Amino acid sequence: MDFKREEIKEYFNDWIKENDEDIYPDKFGYYNQYSREDLHHNCFNTDYFIIGTYKANQWLENQIFNVINFIKEYEMDNFGEVTTDFSSSEKVVNMYVYIIGEDIVHEYKEKNNLW
Image (cartoon, rainbow, N blue to C red; front, side):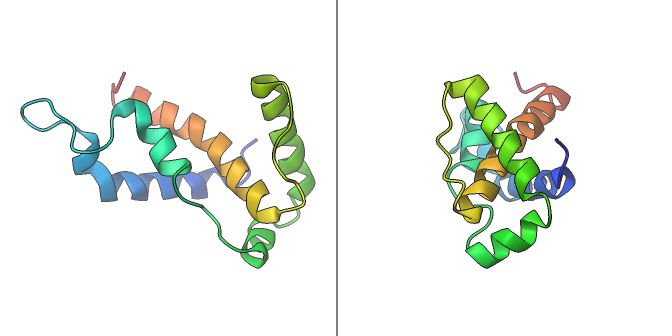
């Protein structure tokens, strides 16, 4: 699903710019804060992408059911059960962004040889 993928990618790129000195090792090979393995967690799981029901509803536009189905499929494939609270549009948005963020981080690592 590519709904708002570019917006999420921009969010990630902005996060990278703000944290680049903490992501790449210094001249001695030490990381200041984030390791390459933690990029996804730190960008997409330590803070909310959207806060507030109104903002979340606006962000989802008319794609709420498509996004919910996408999340259900992801959670069943990865966890064997669905745990996201679909009565909260805020939680729906943030889980969707988390999932799309996995692909975005993977592409970034591949492009920048961060394996």
